View 1: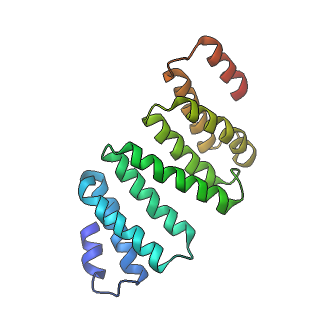
View 2 (view 1 turned 60 degrees about the vertical axis):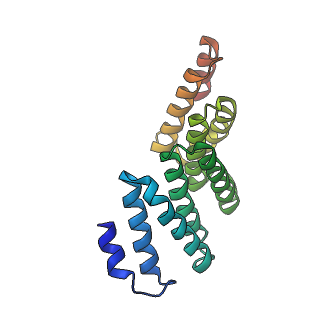
Length: 175
């Protein structure tokens, strides 16, 4: 499907939105099964977004997210972490703080990247900043809030210094 979309719109001018969307579809489709082939396509999609749609911060952040996910799929966790940090910082700035759903989502992605690198302390700190904001703005029963709770619990379990007291403390904070 990705190739079909690309072949249909490849003849359009480079700055054409539909052509850019088709390239993004191709990159995301390739990322599912062939991330090594997807990365250059996703990087070009990001470059096009920065060149032609620089006024659409959301489009640029979406393209960056695709690149970061692909880097992680390729095992390039350190590089993915750098991109996730930038996305989170830009989302927080764009949204005016961490209480917006976009900022919380990008923070969740950053936390996952930190977990992939076993950076437990920074992951805990970030999640403990995000959780209260998510509860206030999204509610305790929102899927993203629940996912953050689950991620923090997994972090506390996986961290080498975890103790029963730490887990109880988190249960009091979460409940």
